[in-house]
Length: 501
Ligand SMILES: Cc1cc2nc3c(=O)[nH]c(=O)nc-3n(C[C@H](O)[C@H](O)[C@H](O)COP(=O)(O)OP(=O)(O)OC[C@H]3O[C@@H](n4cnc5c(N)ncnc54)[C@H](O)[C@@H]3O)c2cc1C
Image (cartoon, rainbow, N blue to C red; front, side, top):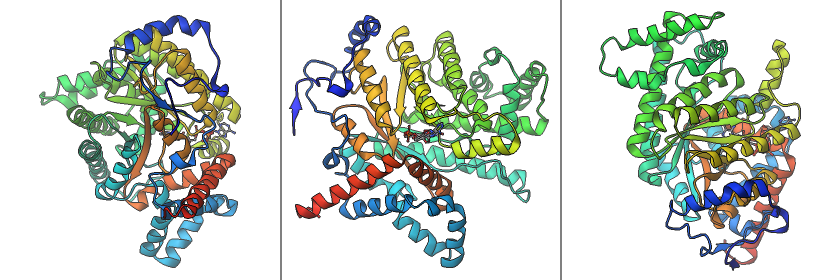
């Protein structure tokens, strides 16, 4: 393999920026002390092809039969009729084949390609194969829900289900610790832990409060009162007093109790995260939950990201018009309260649904008008965070570039150079979804960048919404899906020609 002393910027990533270089000396000086591998000048990295065509590197972790499946799945996703009618087709499929046969068919195709498995045991070999090529898994036990609720489900049943989901996330933390080793990550979804209708109302409640930074540190409050028998009472008092601030909306006693139960679940998950040294990523979801989810994630950070290691990561969706403002506010708050700001930047996965709901219900579309506007915001948000890295002590601001977009990856790589952030630094890392754009992820990992893969697992039924989103996404960005398909085929042909089957 071709190696060089230190990666020279390829033509596509060369540019220099005087202003950032003023800050970079400081970062470089500080980062040398963080890791023994940080003798910048001496590390030899394999050359990174910034056009990301290295299929020989991309699919080493896949067996030949999996390459064939990948090619087939991407072919299926290019059929508009299938993607447009996927929910209906899934229903027919289940009716005609029966649930068991239908699930087996899914497992042999899309589920098999985009999902690690159904149980910790099934995902273990997948984790090992990712790690073998330098890619770190982010375990994602997939449970989520939206606002459609069946009236036949009682509050007690909901509570039991949400407790069960919280325990599953804690199990996921343990699995990550035992199988992946410490310092890997797991992802959680808040909608798995509370009734969506209540989360939505909490969202509206928080939205109506002009200055949320006046609210007390909610997890500090909880952990201080852990042994107090009247904890529910005092929690409700503290939220009720905030109701005064919010003039337009108040929460009922039952809703307050449900929110309180959510906080307990989140607190338990965060404590398990600290015990096992496995940080949590709080996923971003639909915009009508997002103010609440973002509030909870930043509150968790405020309490749990106090020392030199971040245990909680938030998520910023750059397709939302408001994201840059929210990000600015949260960076300022992290500095003010002196905790580690850690987050992943994504474009956003619910665009079709968001646009449809805005149109149906007659409110302003929360999504940027064009793909270009979303990309511009993504890059601007990344700039904001990088600026913040230079302002605060080393390690107090960390960002994960969670994207498959090659321009964005190149942009981030160039910015790392401008700011003199070494590859392998935990200040800037990269992440993609299992089964997508392996030609980017494995190339980055091969060249020394800190690289992660979201690895969803769980029961087939609960992963269907996730698979539907993957199909929509791959249809929407045709060139990327086309490249994935072509490179799968190339890698497969290569193996057949060289008898490496
Ligand atoms: C590790 C990881 C974690 C993730 N976690 C989350 C999460 O917590 N929450 C979440 O919502 N998503 C999450 N995603 C999914 C992510 O939001 C995107 O859906 C997906 O990654 C595709 O975006 P991309 O950056 O890879 O680039 P591309 O595929 O180049 O961009 C596609 C995206 O651009 C945006 N877009 C496309 N067309 C338009 C248009 N006309 N106008 C405006 N915007 C447009 C949409 O967001 C679309 O998904 C995650 C992705 C990764 C890789």
